[in-house]
Length: 388
Ligand code: EPS
Image 1: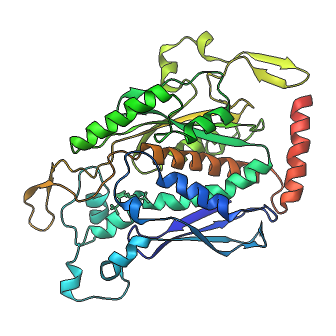
Image 2 (image 1 turned 90 degrees about the vertical axis):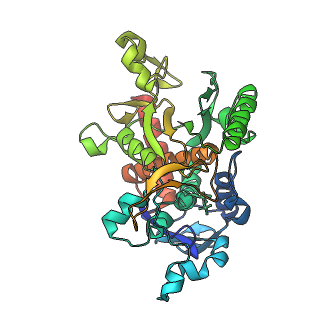
């Protein structure tokens, strides 16, 4: 299974084509729209989200509520496009129109300057428009389809915000995937701890007052994942490696860890490895989950626990030094519109990327022409692993 996305942030629409999903997955459009709405929310978002009401249009691959096995095309219109028709139109324009919203002043931390050098763009807007996190809308749309496949296969995924701008919550060990989902869904910062939620919001308010932005740490957990997705036999077959790539591919993400993660550097081996136990009801399990559900690049049947770190959004109201590419003169970069924190929204995107990688791994491992046969095969495989 693979997908590509297309579309500029202020262009007419965003598009994705998903190829390689089985035929017969029941699909609810309401559920796709619900996922899109989740990504648009979160305390700290800026003015753009008041303009957009993301809803999906399906133009191929789904008929009468089920996937056909053919490529699925999804479209989300940019409502803001009506304000950008001349700037973002595809027809050639005169010199005066070319200067409208032209960007010659690259923002530090953005793709603007490097993208401009690489693609030889005179107008750095050509970079900004595609490098914008607006693109993540389509990743969430793809994941909304994949989520419906995983749900039918008894795999559930949830996500929550662990930290915003240094304010960190703790998550009780025994919290189930379902509890995490319920608590995060009821919090405007996707924090499972209501006491910390208020502190996170105060931090966002304070940051906004100071014309600054903040990043954070998000966590994604997945339960019901069968043993043996991914493989130790080849470097690029390791599923934790694929998930790591998927997480770091999210705009502004700078790092990833599984289970105890970087903390493993400070612990003894006896504190990190998860002891193996067996019971008739559950088969092989582990007494702890320090390794976050992976051994040898393969899922071990324990919940997957993956965290990603997001840097602060580089579009700052607070001016930073940069250089104008026309004049080579230094200037102070400042902007008209930004999110002071998009960590809660990015958390939904991180969840989406894990969902997509899990769906891909399932489709790789099992029969993937007919979803009906896939379901039967997964059921038989789960029985096999239980009785091993
Ligand atoms: C973004 C800048 C802002 C965000 C945008 C990502 O958009 P604008 O430039 O239109 O004010 O709102 O995020 C989205 C549009 C979205 O859907 O998440 C950026 O520079 O990355």
